[in-house]
Image (tube, rainbow, N blue to C red; front, side, top):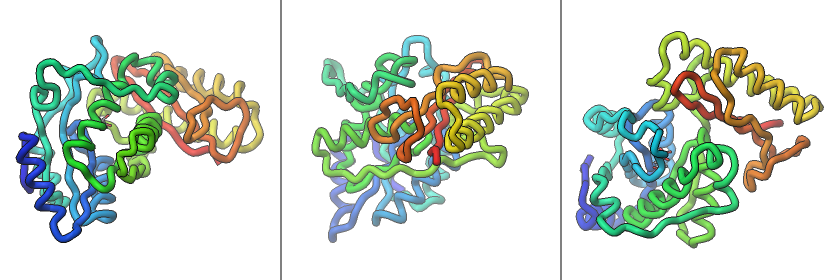
Length: 279
Ligand code: PAF
């Protein structure tokens, strides 16, 4: 596996990978890889001839009081995992390569970025959309793969790729979960043993709420009940539990087939997100 940090070298390496009409799948990550990321990599290897993974902890998607400095980083460990998965190329630019002095262009996917995590984390999705657009232009893949765990991010990237005619297929990979149902996340590493045990309440409550909604329960009541149950389960606060249209992310007050339950909650200093289809 080649590890590349320079854009001109990246272009040469990707051109070589594409020789003979071979296809390339990009899996963008911020490193600290877990089985969820590896499932994205495996999907990349299934749908394309080569998998390229990027590792870049993107400063522009962290708020001033968020965990950019503390975000777990272990490139040697990540690279070893990617070699085992048969990844062709690891793109690992530094901050100066990604954002040279004077960088001043940003992408905002206005309609989809304002609510949910966008409301709790102002500027976050502009940072995500901008870095993903740059990664797309740097790697020029045929396909790019993102986890469904961050459903709003996936919807935003799909819309951006469509709006800006990137010509890249955007694929979502199903959420990887621990045996007790908690969605895998690099941020789970921040949880104490007691918090990790309590965190199981999050997917349990969301599953129950989804079932209630399909069963005909009032949506507003069910969401309010779910928020209370998450706090009772040991979380400190709930950013949102919402029923949304899966594509437009419009908030729904009644069940429909394309509905998705989206949620974010805080336990100690850790903010967890999850979502699931309803029906
Ligand atoms: O989901 C992530 O890890 C990040 O938001 C992404 C897509 C790699 C952009 O920095």
